[in-house]
Length: 211
Image 1 (cartoon, rainbow, N blue to C red):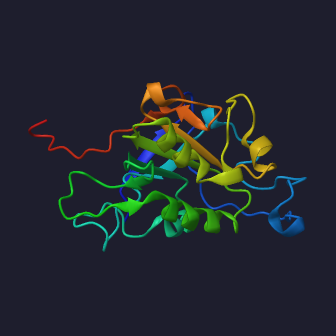
Image 2: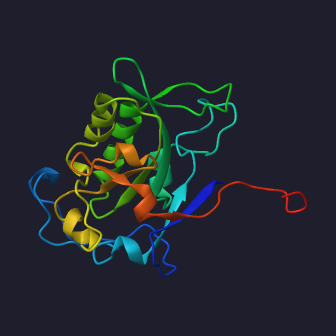
């Protein structure tokens, strides 16, 4: 079971992302830009889709007493999830970690380690596009830089909503980061504004008789 957050980018038709099929191949062991983009996202624009996401994507059994998800992000990606929400915090040395403060039995998850797991999966899925949505508790420019640079060359910077996603995918750029904190937006670094790019459904479960 997944705890879902359906995220819509501004005006959207109800298109839900599922794993795509592709025919073209990477060259030079995956390091060269793709000449052809042949996946589901190649001709899509961010403002024409619903994207299936998970809330607190990193909260899984063994790491948290009250997990939100059953599997870690690579398996979620395999199952068709294309958006991941992460609560990101910063240690005094600038290292980024994830935790869920409301879970007293939870642990601190090293962000860079989880990112590497997702990147390894994306290496096998060159035409897939993912969103990373930060619930942002970063404190310094160093923490912001570490949060973005962990994604390496797969990170989209200076995202242009008027470009098809295929323009980025052909360059090997598969990851779009968004923050909920407007004062930490830095598109050159790769940190984009979730408040202007996304519209999100409610993910809280309320009793209709009392709410």
